[in-house]
Image (tube, rainbow, N blue to C red; front, top):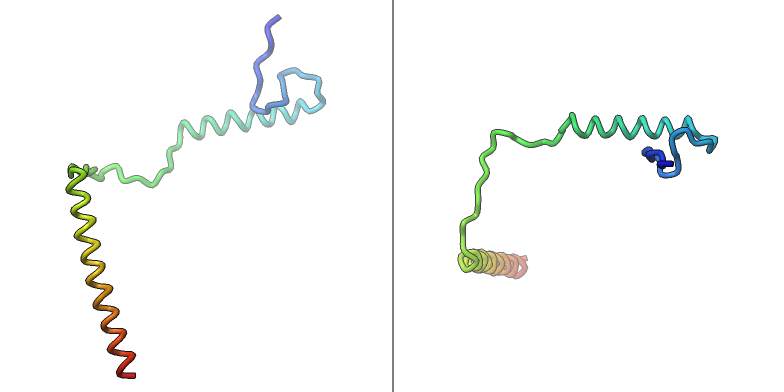
Length: 91
């Protein structure tokens, strides 16, 4: 005799005499509704008209860019430190 299909609830079988058949049916209905909602409604915030861009740089070019940005950050930090030293001496 083939086993009946399991419903959404892991402990419930259709026509089971577990005493919680209404809970089993409710869980099955909720699972079916969730599956329909997931299939029918896509509510992601995505712009369908946006053009995608692809980064075609080589790994070496990416490393060069990181190095340049690191140098710029280092220069900015040195300038800020100089300004802080100047203001602490004045005050």
